[in-house]
Length: 394
Image (cartoon, rainbow, N blue to C red):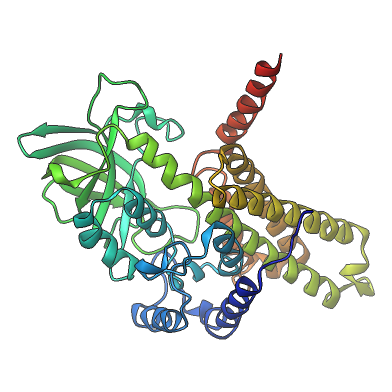
């Protein structure tokens, strides 16, 4: 028998997160400064309240100050947190810090955890993840050109990265660099911890982007003879691609559930406004086109939610969820975009204005089809894996 009920302890936690959002997050959305975030003092005050309520870092285990609620728990909580663009930072699980913390937890040495994970998990510092390069396709990290050459007890890094989110003001970067050019394409690169005050770590610029942005920008970076100790290697040499998969897969659960949160809030706004707004003598809710948008949105949000929870369930069981994660990535991104688009259309000029969160949701939604792997690649991955099962059965 399939049981879709939410365990009482998780339901109680969801209620506490919902109450915090109602009382502390939505009322402060008007304090957001695009490309900067909330005023630092206000953000720290709200984060302190989150920690006091034991709602900090749903993605981390309790021994590192997190909620320790597994992937299903993370999914359920992140849907609520994702209803506001300022939510993730207030709960200590914003990208790229959340993914970096998870990566450090599974791959770092004890010394690295104390130096890098502890302050990151506590929210005392920010970090960035430097993988994407302008010269090669971001969808194929096996073609990276940034190199890290060993010289004695040091690794010398040279290369060019861009769209490195949160780089300005970060304490350190996790850098993907080629350490063995002659190795198999999936074993050429390694991950390296690089403090951002290391000589040779140079931020060229914050690249202007379409979305709402956030603290630290989306930066172009150059590594020019940037030297770090060999002990800054994260995991083993040649494990870069493997670690990237370990980081990005679970992270997509959080992204996709936050997308559902944004879509659900947009859906609720669409329904409420359709009942209030009159056109030609009757509420918009009486129009068949609007009713179709509402029905389609309800079906698509429900499907995306169940698909994402299924992927989280498989991860909690230790099962291979690569197909499910690729499915929710490209399907969830489209659902979010379409629901927000319909909500804006129902709101008319109001939806296009900054008087509602819809226009910001819409700008952010476009990027979801690109980051964490473009949708086309995820669709191809799904098709290839499905076809392989038929080949084995033939």
